[in-house]
Length: 77
Image 1 (spheres, rainbow, N blue to C red):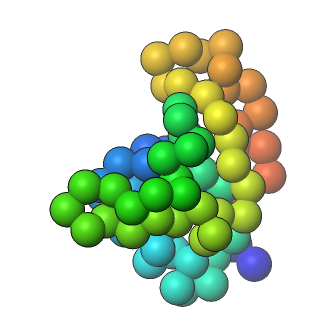
Image 2: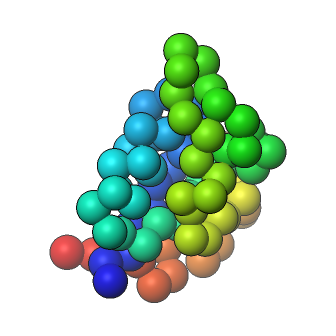
């Protein structure tokens, strides 16, 4: 199974990206700053995606020290 990393999974577009990758059978690691937001629907009817994520990585892109190991095991094709 191909593994992907989706940054911004709690945002409007990120939620739909998670949903589509899962529909296509991918294993998903999501980067989220606030993981609680994944459990609730987002703005403008964007779906809750917590149950579609295989691995949750909590970190912030603006804080590089929180991203160590983020890409470990992710495909690089």
